[in-house]
View 1 (cartoon, rainbow, N blue to C red):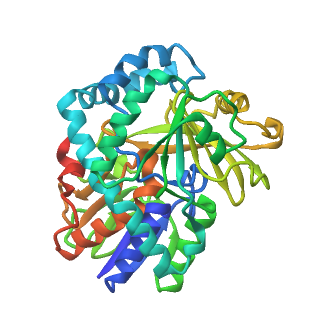
View 2: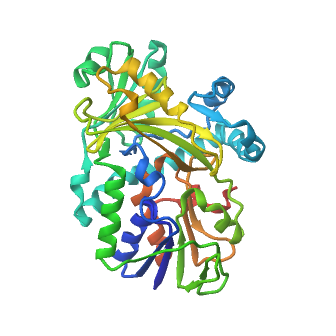
View 3: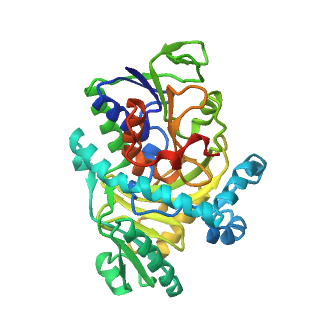
Length: 410
């Protein structure tokens, strides 16, 4: 079959490989080019250890305080609030205890596939040198958080995720650059991070082309309802194929609407600052629970990023948020270079209220399959998603219950 993938980010590129494995003819389309958006600027962590959605009963109690701080871990631009209200209503529903537990079940299911899928794909594509397995740390400042982190660790272990609780002195032994301000940390010895998101995505993209995939820089504004869907561009061009995969990230919503699915997709604007050439300060990714950011030692340089801002796809970046992340890091980590020597970035994470992606067939045309909305976990879940999409197209039962990710769940 001839299959078109709309989106040349990490999810679309990984899906190209999975479909090439099945012997399909693959056409990749993207209006910007490969590795555009979060696929080039994310934290670079294969974060299969994360099993809790953002929407939770505990998070709801914190949201009012977050919103009072325009530079805090979660912010909404005032002018964007009316547009976001339907999404926020879904977020509130997803935070109810029963819905929260359903989201956790979905998270665990796809996260259990994530690391094995990545290791297998990297080996097959000859890019295993991009994957580093030195574990990851999740630090906390307040000793009162210990019980909550231990409870989370119990849930993670039940899902097959290794976790060790560290005392402050053990944390400092692993990462001497950390200042003596922490009550402890969770250590995930099996966690992996990558050389650099842009480098890895481009390596995967180029190996897909070497295997026979083709690429065209083009914008898709609509998809027809025929048995052989036609991709339609804003200037009228068309490409007729047998199947379509929509993997356009934060730009997927209009295409899904054209296929009869009203997906509550919005964009979390993520910020980071990278310091090219700064290596060796830390050895592994470190998440800072109480300050809402992560630090990753990429081969291209140290990256500090995180936080969530809702402001849509058109408003300019607010890099005061990036500076706020750096200022927090400077209080916790010795040896950081000056902020002015870094390279700032902002990207659009495709976000759904329950923190689960959309993976499944379109309502109006079963020959169109969705693979978008991964939020913070596009890099992590990309190769697992690719396998699920390939199974759907082949008519096989997917490796896990994809009802968690149904486009019609909303």
